[in-house]
Image (cartoon, rainbow, N blue to C red; front, top):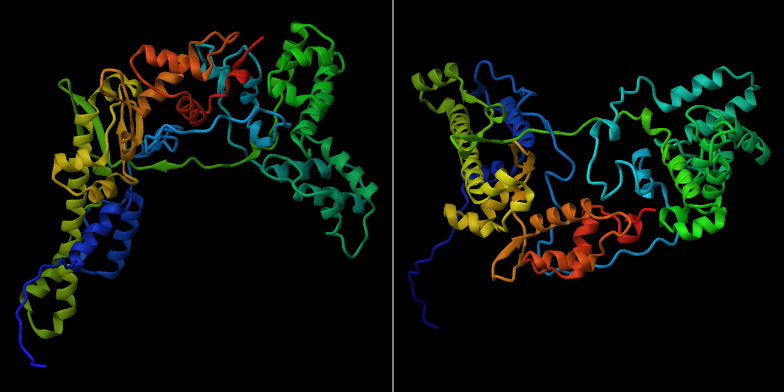
Amino acid sequence: MKQTLQLKVTQHLTLTPQLQQSIRLLQLSTLELNAEVDRILQENPLLEREEGDDDTIAPELAASILPAGATSDPARDDDGDGDGDMPAGVDTAPTRDDLPDVTDFADYGGGGDGDWGSGASNDEDDFAPQQAATSTLREHLLEQLALLNLALRDRQIVAALIDALDDDGYLAASLDEIGELFADDAIEPEELTIGLKYLQSFEPAGVGARSPAECLALQLQALPKATPYRDEALQTVDGHLPLLAARDFAKLRRVLRCDDAGVKGVRELIRSLNPRPGAAFSRDEANYVVPDVVVRKVRNQWQASLNEAAMPKLRLNRIYADILTRNRDASNQQLSAQLQEAKWLIRNVQQRFETILRVAQAIVERQRRFFEYGEVAMRPMVLREIATMLDLHESTISRVTTQKYMLTPRGTFELKYFFGSHVATDTGGAASATAIRALIKQLVAAEDTTAPLTDSRIADLLGEQGILVARRTIAKYREALSIPPVNMRKAL
């Protein structure tokens, strides 16, 4: 075989360290970016923060609590296939997850501010301000235990039961499992039962329960015997709580042998109870995010601007830079490399925020009707539209919109919130899935609770507005909005 030399010209993309750093910084959230900057500041003496930049964020501007469901929309039908399963019927007793707090018991009834379809709400009534707990549930219960004149053995049993409680005040372990903790000293089942009775007599009422039904029963038993509908409520939680959860009022009337007024009284009494007695002692900290962009209306135009408080302000250390300027010998190669890295970081951080601002402004221009009228005016939009508009790659838009937040007069939203699938209209146009969910909320809020709207009826009403949505898609969006099915929204 004869050997020959050939010259071939090809092109390939090489990611330089500077480009790799730029891509990495672009996909970091603001908190992650500040952590990365802090790490580099410790390693590179050529880099320093500008005076007055202590890496703190002004709470009145930069730190804002995300409203529920505002930053992300996991229920958004991104693929646009419109599929979705119908919700299963209620045929078992509700679990503790089904009874999140006292206000959620309003979902069992047809009246009150907590009902879907009430058409009005009172924030002050629904969410009364609560003072932060000064002691934990365990400390509160041990204080009550210390006041009892019990033998050391009984005191140890009750303390073991207290340690087995979860954050909601429920007994997470069985009595047999707790008895195994006393391996060196056998504990009789009767002793554990007596200890549990002591625990269940403590405040708050319902603590030490092993199920939601037992928790409600303990609270009802603590009420005066003259309390109206107390006996009927005890009978309901003792074995007929699924009927109340499923709003099967007709069958519940037969079981309790009472009229509609009696069922309503039982329902209101159970609504007044707290299915999570230990939750008031929890110390959950609110999650905060730092918005990268602030949107304001200036001269009837919506404009996006960078949140200066979220931008790390960096500069070169002049002392070391002057040393390198005067001495350019081989002994300063390490400092020269660090100087170049510092310049790269300053340039890449600046480029990161410039790209975020460009993307945010493009989103604002495309979704300006949302800022004027809310979710019902959200238009369908995909990453490709913004990428084409700004002459960027879709992957760049995806990195920019991930974990980057926009502070607007309507709340704080992740940039990805403004992207969503579309549903066809009878005029050949398209409606955003976010707008359709907002319309579903409006229809359910205005419905007659004695004859709530079915998924098929909601689909028909949207069809009258020119939006073609399948019934299963309505069911999918309704579940994503945590709206109960039609039988759960029906009132007496």
